[in-house]
Image (cartoon, rainbow, N blue to C red; front, side):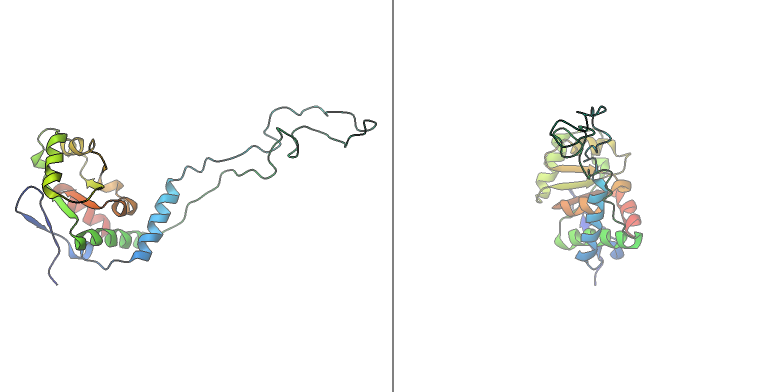
Length: 205
């Protein structure tokens, strides 16, 4: 089987890709497990409620114990009172799910290989952006004519390239160190800078 290749957008050149990363077997179950773990880790888990010990008021007994004809009550903070605390409030829920490093790397290889096999993976030369230009980035994507949304992976040093793409509609920009499987799956097209390609292959190896 021939080694996978990706076109350099805006030129006639192609770049050889690492077969172990971009020519791997696509394993949807690993991708699903990893994406679920990434999305769970991103959840703020800040939903909560106040127990009877946290709500305001209710320090004094609302009425005397006997002689009123009403049920005895010691506080207005009780859950069955209006304005009282919750009986079992949800607090500090942890949604994290563990995924082994080998599984996470295999899932990333699967996601990258799916783009390579579908022909939706391209490489961009950061040298073509000596200064930020959203117009130049839009023209480059127009020549490539791939489906949106698009994920661009670039090195932090490729500042002009990053600033050129980040204002485009339905385009997300990230760096290799923060690349997640959920981002690769979300994107219909994937664009990697030549400088970032080696780092992406290193993360997935």
